[in-house]
Image 1 (cartoon, one colour):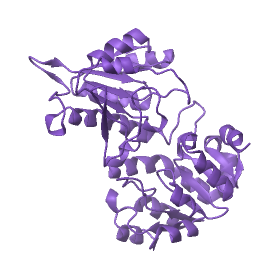
Image 2 (cartoon, helix red, strand yellow):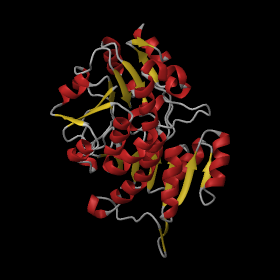
Image 3 (cartoon, rainbow, N blue to C red):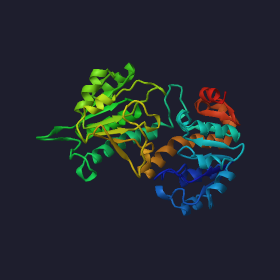
Image 4 (cartoon, helix red, strand yellow):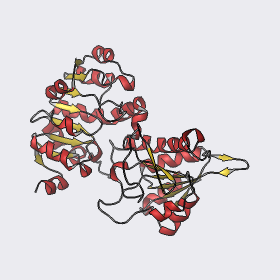
Length: 360
């Protein structure tokens, strides 16, 4: 099979869908790999390393997309990239079509078999291709929040930690999944007083054992309000159903925070859990102020550490990529229930329930 790896095009997005080592493993298995020139440069993987691993280098995006029977990518295609889809080809990467209905339409129109990283699901319900980036995003959320609280970033001059005379900094984390746990671990390591809110009772019990120094609660309105009001840093790792009028952190709660406090919304692609996360931001213009509170709502947080993120993501995705290449797309889907769960459409025919509904 010929696998194509285009260069990412979103704002300051330097991750890449495949490393030279992943390329080498595919080539050794008898497959062809085509990498767009400069695709790995931002993550520290120059074109020469891909050539040494056996890849061909394509000069532009159009040639890369056109050549790939399977395109492996990190971030979901932008609208301009949809015009480059090879008819009848396959795509393997993040898609987030729930907020991008036009992307699902493009997959259908081009007869694409689209497999979404974030929907690949194991028997226990875990999401193995979403977890690596969630872990990094949670980790980075606290580091970014700590930086935004510094005066050099226009913040109020607060250190995330526990210093004699100042006491521990309050950090409130909404959502106790992979990202929330990761955020809590970093905040605790810095010495913060951490409160985690998690809806699922079984997961709350797990977190209480995993994070004994943190306070873990169900997201009761009064408890959330108290924790957010006391926090210099609030991190959202939760989502709410699309179109819901219910917010875990309301505007009134945000208004109660101190001027210059920081909110990091990790789930920027699925806004709603925090009422004041009124728009997504970018690495070039990462923040806005709402109710006196600094909001950071960047969808691709792991992009700021592209080498680490690429290595971690490929560690999870490469076995699936090899399976698709070795068995062919159809057979790989038939023989792997986890991979099948990630299929949005097969040869342009909608498969996922929400894509079927959208296509009606």
